Length: 218
Image 1 (cartoon, rainbow, N blue to C red):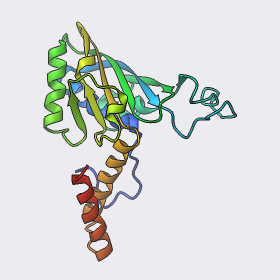
Image 2 (tube, rainbow, N blue to C red):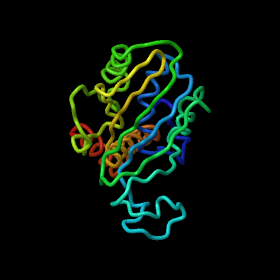
Image 3 (cartoon, rainbow, N blue to C red):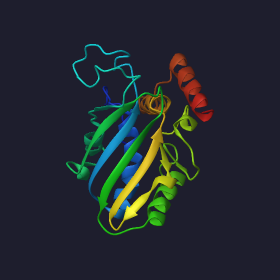
């Protein structure tokens, strides 16, 4: 919030996948050091794909979204460098579009700066979800599947049961509602920008009050 001010007129909220990846990467990098990593988003199909085989500039996305798992590209990993500059060039990734209508999953594997354990990794994420990232990150140690995260407002829902560690090699996963979670972050940005611009007209004030009220009820 402290980075957004009245002088900003055009703002990017990045992608739903970046919004899921960033809350995972930040605390893990701060506590363990992220040397290099690769992420795959197992992503629900979207309206950028075809329901039946038809023309699309991306040959993969030209195939029927409801019939296949489709490997394709994502810029989510590269976008992390915009918010954590020291990670520029250390992360890359891809997407696999799957025949489900909503909720996606980030699978991140990375080399840490030192050896660690499943318990330490999970504790780092649990603490982050309870403190500085509590508005965007949740921590779950229950055996849930994608449909259980439908309409969850957090950007990143860390799945503690999927954490794997081998020395300094770490694998973590987080679920996200790729529609609703992202919409909530857009609302966050709207509220922050309205506050930064000190809008106090009746219409803006009413809209701001309504937005904050909706957010409390999520």
